[in-house]
Image (tube, rainbow, N blue to C red; front, side):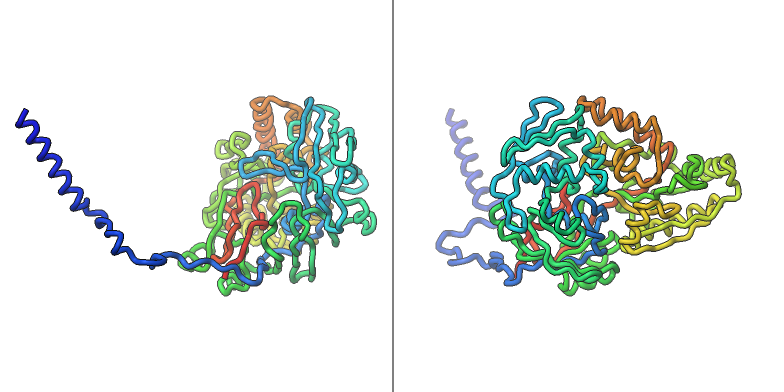
Length: 528
């Protein structure tokens, strides 16, 4: 027993000595009397807000109109998203959350009842009510208005105003993507009197969003001003946003470096140029946008699926990603990998893998053994699309197709897109928040954005069934089959979904873009 007690004493002594010596990774704590008084010397200085809370954004293109129901260009949507709002919205996890509607009930699979948030005002000062919701959707559904979301809501049979703040939607049949489509800016709520006074909203605005339209100098700049009566208290934090049109990437980068702009989007090739610049922060995410080449299938030779398939097989999509996006892009169909299980694994699809000999065989079968000439229409404002077309010229040459490029300003490009005034057209699209938007919207015979003259009964049957299928697994299977059929017929060739990069001055805080909400400026503050 004495030996045991002695051993315990020795262990305790040794432990005390070792504790006093420390472990070599940190010095022993100083006595309280030796601690420096006041603020620690390494504490960060307190941040001070800048006097001018105007965010300056370098944008790549002029908006082609700002009517939320009609304007489809990327340059327009980035504006309308800040001026207008829909009943619901999507969070970063693809969940449907409140916006102008504070709550909703779905008593059966064809009835949706929304309770509106009270006190929400349009920018003209009038309160938004259920009658405005009814008017907005009647405007969308009226074929005379040519609203882009008409095909989103073709199962919408009744819109009933139950009281000032309650509206009921009745569908003719179950429609799985209904709630998802309600999140679209194309489903924004607008005031009847402003539309009727101006004919449309292409050059004027009156939404409920966090910003209102200030000065608009065409081809130069646009200013958005803080909505002082915005229905979310304390937002937006900015006083205004000035969007400067700078079509050239190098000009936007130069302006960012000098502080002439606070925020802009640039290609990945610019990452190396700013990696050691402490004044610039990179915000990135895998986008749900994709680049493509669309065919006018109403004219020869593009009315022959074999020609379109041959051109698809001529393309090396990984080479495009490497050259155009510095490798920071994935090969993608219209339902991008960001959609998870809804996206077909395109790497296993035959039409996404280059096969020059098979491409030549198909051209020969179609009667074009010696190839042909084609003009690729591109938007000059989008350098990644122009660069994609330049790579395609080289790749198509391998199967005897001689391609040239026709660059158009964004307004002319959109008009050519709408009117099928092209042979083939390179561009980029967004996939929305539901696979039906990515597929049916662009390629269903009756799709609002089917500007390709494309129609196929099998494809239509699959996506139409997908709309009314409530079981998720069954719906996934239908849309995967629809993608297989689409790639086989190739009305569009799909290339890459790139990483999206925002280059931001380090004194700008509160900007956190994500795949389903890429440009929410409401929380931004600028510091000195």
